[in-house]
Length: 357
Image (cartoon, rainbow, N blue to C red; front, side, top):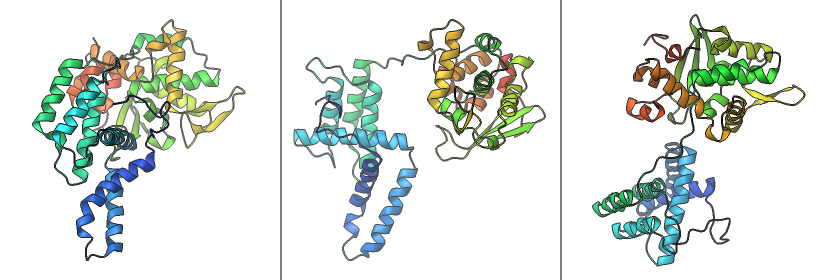
């Protein structure tokens, strides 16, 4: 199968959100097609639309786009080989996955994670279409087991975490008379104390923050691991030291920037004017990289995840129980938390107390 993409192959299209919707609608139509004879077609079309909408809401947009892209790749492979993609047999799926792992012609194999996702997309499409699921067949399971052993599951190049000592060093170099330094200080300290992903940190608004006698409560409306938007809160305790206190640094920034509502972290132009739109997640990452470089770190080793990883490591080293750390990071199990640790009443035991800020 060709490894070309839309940038090099004019015949290969990249799925768009519309393609994602079409994929969902297609499998819903397949499921309802037999009910069309003698039925109220208008009512069926309305039902189709409602089902498709619910299915789209059941997955994040990023997941749907990935599945649509993976499904398009599989269907193209089947068309090229003269095979049926819906329904596909276990042998067809096994052959496809095998070719991804060993494409030949000196081309590199796909990553195991990519192959696993392709299989998941095929599985999802067949489930939505109400067809027998070839991806769950024992043949396909054995092939995937062999692919994992053949290619291995090497960990991704993880970005380094920032320690409390790193955060202190960065903060000590910042100038509280410069607005951008006041903002960056709040970003770094609050990001470190909350272990928020860069997107969640960038999305915080004033209404998400609630004062508390012992610090702050941050209310998260939605996150990567909370696609249903149930929400949760994070307890942020006052720091032990005034200069590295995440609560005081946030309040100082809000006061200095005269921000009473809307996004908390915003762009500042070269004239010192504060914008009205929130920073992007990439801007949070660039801020971390910039200040890591200022204390002699290689910025390539750091990213938006560095405060989250550093939080977990530092809190663990200082004796915070895994369940306490997980209450801040949002992990539902301590097993999911472990890769981040390298070496009913509020404020019962906030993990941010263990950071030594």
